[in-house]
Amino acid sequence: MIPPLSAWGLSGTPAPLPGGHRNTVLRLHDHVLKTTRRSEAAIAWLLPVMDRAQPCGLTTPRPIRSTRGPFVCDGWTCEPFFPGVPAAVAPFADRFEMFHDACRDVPQRPGFASARDLLDADAGGDVDLSGMPERLVTAIRAAWQDVSDHETAIHGDLSANNVLVQSNGTITLIDWDEARRDMPVFDQTCRDKSDPRDMRAAAAWEIACCWRIEPARARKLARAFLAPPP
Image 1 (cartoon, helix red, strand yellow):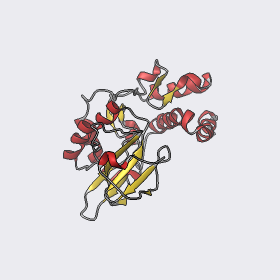
Image 2 (image 1 turned 180 degrees about the horizontal axis):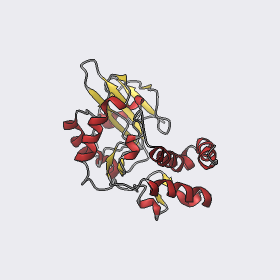
Image 3 (image 1 turned 120 degrees about the vertical axis):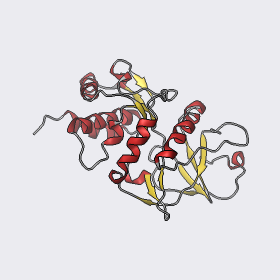
Image 4 (image 1 turned 90 degrees about the horizontal axis):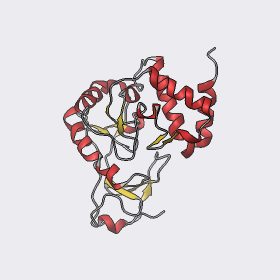
């Protein structure tokens, strides 16, 4: 796929960036172009959420509106490129807690559903439980029920690859594709020590998200998830 560079007033030859397992990610000078499955409303939802991250010591790559008007053009988005070195997530846990506290009143991202919603509903965001084996769905919902907690806006994919430290010490949080309103435990399992119930809930979410998009990986994870404890 070729991004519509003119939609953002760009020209040149983009180069692939690492990561982006589910989307194509390209860099062109100081911009990053990504394919997206998200709606215009889902991309726009990110802006006020990112506004709340800033006072918590987290800079973010805000989506750039195209010259046509929308953020999404021909299935692509554009955002600024941030240099930096991948960093462990745990040392910045206090910033993420501040972010979660600041976002408790944020509504659900358009088209998405939280784990709590999916205790009864079948689909939302990348999750569609309707095509999964009943035994697996029951186990996944049980894992989410076991850690049922308050909801807030979360990043949804905290990892060292998505936390960058710039040369001036600034912390930049990238790749907000899986952000949504959900339980903060899904962001907290990146810590050095996490409750086994939280880890199981996060594993259940990963299986549910991957079932259609990355089926081989999802089925491998599901086998381990359903295996009896040693």
